[in-house]
Image (cartoon, rainbow, N blue to C red; front, side, top):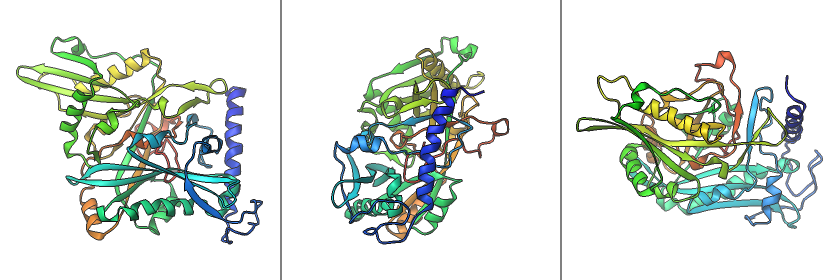
Length: 418
């Protein structure tokens, strides 16, 4: 039976989502300068401006959870108290704010990251819009449409560079299917997101005690950068410069495992992104506002396993990372991957949290670029840890175990993947 504090937490979420649902159900096509007949306040017009520090408190109070989440299975969710934190993850980050022309009401906002990534062996400019939020009482004014239109101007201003806008959305999000059918957005690949609870210690293989095997934690960004550049050079949407990921406060360290057999070295690696510096994970199973700790793992690879030795180097490294996190009080680990990434077969390490299927979409400026992107859809794509913000963790049911098609984490379009 759930505790009363757990019920209170879920009731509070439900109340916020009911407000969101009521406003969504009352959308109107009336002009935004007139009163909408659903209780929305009268405004004289809408203007879009750049984000200011004073907006932080306003945005932190807007509910960003989807209205249709399953509260019966929801075990934990994250809250980002600083709306601007993810903008700092790229050299060029933008936040646009919608407010009334009098400047008295902040209505919503949207973030956009500009990145230099490789696609088909070429350097490309990518724009990633996310964290689009609107104050519930203003949702009948089509604020989101105004914000996305304004953000699209970034794309137009860089049209000479043939940029790409990309988003991800749940494969079970029928509303977004309709949206994409009416836009230039094209599905490129299927993606998946895994998570598991770090609440037990796992037993390593006997070969982990062999003198030929070693595991260490690397904090030298130059060593890590060289390794990642070498392994992910043929992955799509890989950062042009891994400094973008390693020279910031979010990358914590990278684990390496090596098995040396004669003159040959077999290697595996896992990098850690400190998601606690991005948002706060709230536990719904214990006392009100109990905070959990969680890491995102990324940049995972293996060069293979030695012959005639029954050891899976990556599997043993993953168990080591799990155990190290267990000893350091980490409650959850999660990862996002393209389904074409060969490392996907190792996840999730433990059952209990549902996995989420979602899809990567591109908006491209010309048919040639579109065809080039679609031709790459069978290649492995690099999953950027900067793309993850809001996290919803749902408990899996017995029928979900081993079923990759079950959705575990629900999120909004043009928002966080988690």
